[in-house]
Length: 137
Image (cartoon, rainbow, N blue to C red):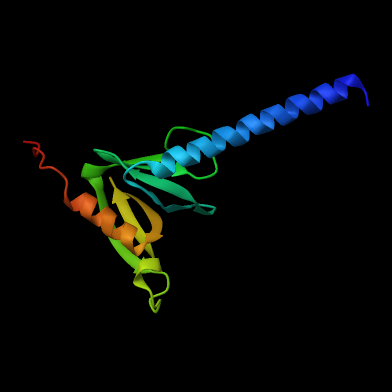
């Protein structure tokens, strides 16, 4: 085997290991944050798996399969409203595993999130527990 090919394979392997390690560390960091939960976002091409995180003043959504440390979407807490909530399987025997599709709206822009029943309870509690804010005059 030519020496250049061996070196190229070694470099490619090292880059692959570094990428896999970075991906694992990102997922581990996002998943262990207090206020993080599994949440899918409906996109024009289908559903995208992700992890949502409650910030102090925004809900941040991170795409699951990505190396980007920044959120893919962020919605301000003060302007985020739940429009509707529909169970995917209304006859599901175990309510804890029931999946809800939650239509939300921010400034006239509507989007849909999918999450488990307990995570929806957490989202609605987080939205209802906003600190009071001054209304514009």
